[in-house]
Image 1: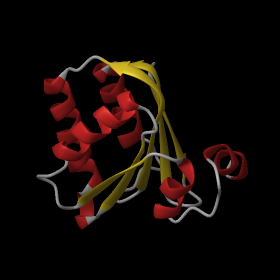
Image 2: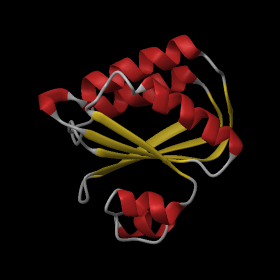
Image 3: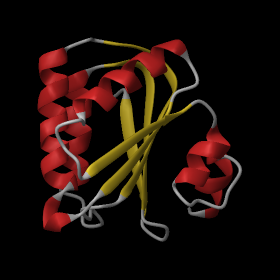
Length: 139
């Protein structure tokens, strides 16, 4: 699967990682698993790592379906969700820009794009310098 997630419940962050060529059906499957996970909570901050993304299937219909499903889950109980897309490559930046536009109808979702790890972590209030440091200390 081209996407995976890890709930870092001790700090209230979900780390989502895309690798290789992203397929929207994988995103929908991973999101369904996340939304049904016992540690899922509306309003959890999201770090979406697009560092290793090499392409995506450009299925805009499924992308909009995925965003609508996510918005419903993210904004439950009147929660607000901060999403930071880490997009250091042109491919990642393109997908992140499309994702940003897709969130416009949902004011309770606050998306941002960063090109490097430290600012992305800082925006989320994570006191680590790198994702590898974050993941090793929250294992």
